[in-house]
Image (cartoon, rainbow, N blue to C red; front, side, top):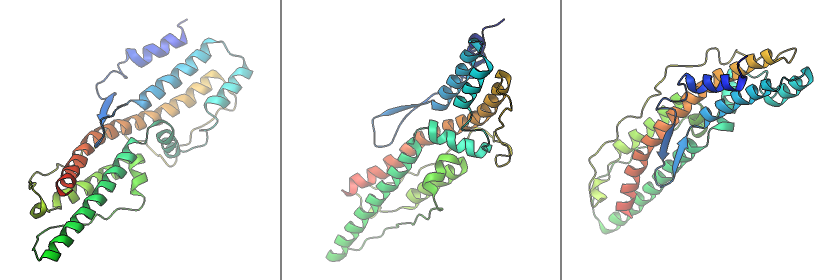
Length: 255
């Protein structure tokens, strides 16, 4: 009989599922020298599979199976796939995307304060100035939606880029800017959870190993999609550094 732990490790690594170059992304956030390795979901999936495999190796009693089921799965049974996706993102993925978004928005606020102050100074001296200061109109709760919905994240990055590309304060700058920021990346995969609002994570009537494996596979289906979201976050974080640096260069020029 094959050792369940060995079999699980072979399933994880032998398939190459955790070895493709997109699985691990190292990103440096704009305005920071700190690098983050973004592979939290891949690590989580590996730990969950190995945990159940090690339990199987112990030849558990029905009582032990019931206790293990309660520990591993009782909190997610009855959730829709969509609810489980949100939970995994909250519990496993770091808040890097949210923090970076807020950091860029705050920097834009600082930029606008500098522009208004400079324009006020020019007005007092009678100096004419030609500037273009666009508006950003956000959808409600966009700062939270970007964590869970790739299309909301693409939208938010697009709004930031549109703002920076339409901003024209060259008449105030020592070094005029002519460069434009390219559009944000799209999520590389077309994979999506089917029936996210309808599919329920089911629980076994009898807590056998086979029943727990079925629940684990349901969890892994959702986790794999969250893993694709994490990869997209990694790409967008790297891209957002360009937006931050672009805005920071204008702030530095005006300061």
